[in-house]
Length: 225
Image (tube, rainbow, N blue to C red; front, side, top):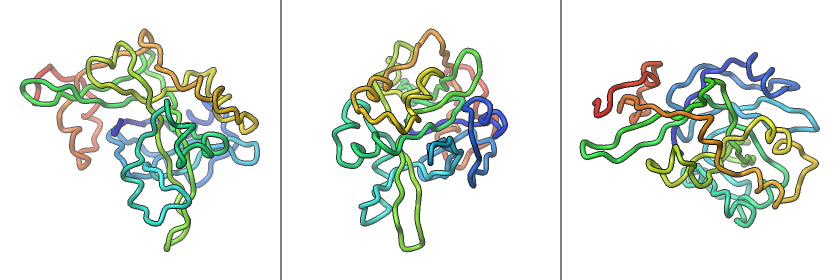
C-alpha cells in the first residue's frame, strides 16, 4: 500500500483515539499521501498516547543512510516479528497511523484503474504501524512503516496485500506498552472485515503525487481517464 487519504481534524483524532496530548503534529487534509511524506501518527510515550509526526518509510536506528526508507514503506505481518529491522519495534515502538481511505490499482485493458477503499460508515480508522528514530547528520528523524496482511474479499481481486486496519477494540492493545508478546500482537494483524468496507473507482490523476486535491476522492465512471 503506497497511497492513502487523511482529512480528519486533530480534534476528531483526540476524541477517537483518546489522545493525551498533541506533539508537534500539524494536520491538514491530504488526499494523496505518499511515501517519504511526513504523516500524523499515534504513538505511546511514557504511558501517554501522543499525536506525533513521522516520515513514511522506516529508517532503522542502525541504518547508514536514510535512503533505506524507500524500501521500508510496508512491513509484512507474517514476518514482522522475525526480521531484524522490526522484531524489536513490535515490542516497543508500535504506532497507529490515522486514515480515512486508501488506494489500490486494478489492471485493466485500458491501463491501471485506481480504487479507493473506505469504511461504509465514512469514519476514519487507524493502520497498524511501527516506528523508529534515526540519528542523521541533520538531527534525529522519526519514521514509520505500515504493516500489510493478506487481502479480504473486497481487496483480493485488485491486490494481493492490504494494510492492517485496526478495529476500535484492537487499538488499545496495539498501543499498550505493557504488551510485548509478539504472538499476541501478531494476532491483531489480520484482514479487516470486508462487510464493513466499500470501494469505488477514482480518477487516474491520483497516480501522480503532484495531484493532491479533494477531487481525487470523487467517484468516477469505470474506464475514466
